[in-house]
Image 1 (cartoon, rainbow, N blue to C red):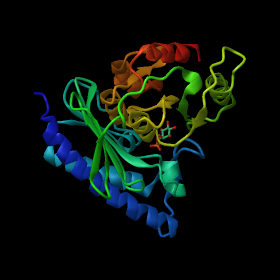
Image 2 (cartoon, rainbow, N blue to C red):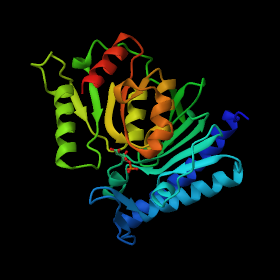
Image 3 (tube, rainbow, N blue to C red):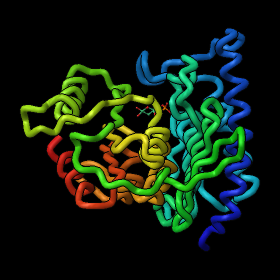
Image 4 (cartoon, rainbow, N blue to C red):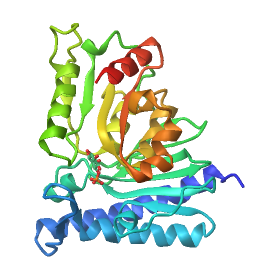
Length: 298
Ligand code: IPD
């Protein structure tokens, strides 16, 4: 049946804190070189550490104990060959360390990203960065929230309420380079960045600035809080975006896949087989349509 979202939320928030403590320990170990376990997954910039695997094992086993009937999709389990079918059953979708490169370099934008999918849609998202000491979470219909974990101060997102944006030319945009650095991919990405941020001559759509945080989940969190107006990336996986997407939607944002595809296609089975484009727009007015139109042209 339908999951009890408030109960799952308190369980997963507590679990995210436990995972966060392990991430802090892991970063200390990496910085003091007592853990040298940084491996290259697909190529020299797609990294995985001993702690990605350890955090996922911890989270997976706790979730299995508490919710034995629920499915589990995790970045490291997937990398190890697990290909569970995505069904209508409640299914956790977890990136144990989103922003692994940041984690390895002690750039503080890394987090755990934990979502619950129900009927293939994200209905709960928890994004916790122990380095930034920020917790972001949302449940379907329950709004999106940020907690400053030092003080337990809690604010509803977006901070200060939704603000209409007059155009891309007044926007601060999140973009990511991703790990595919092949010449063709780099050319396509650079062309998109140019259209988004530096192509004043081609229609005056020059953004105020472009930022790369290095964590998909925290890009979503930042748009949800109002710090970024949009986040654009090619090549996300479901565990990168599922938690961020529900947080963003609950904050009044708009999430779309390639060519404006609806979110069920973005998080759905086809994403488990191949990568998709993601675009996100923070304002729920006509600018949303423009954001999608702009993305379609990229
Ligand atoms: C990656 C990060 C990165 C984004 C990639 C993701 P990982 O996740 O979110 O910012 O550009 O698309 O795969 O590998 O650090 O968990």
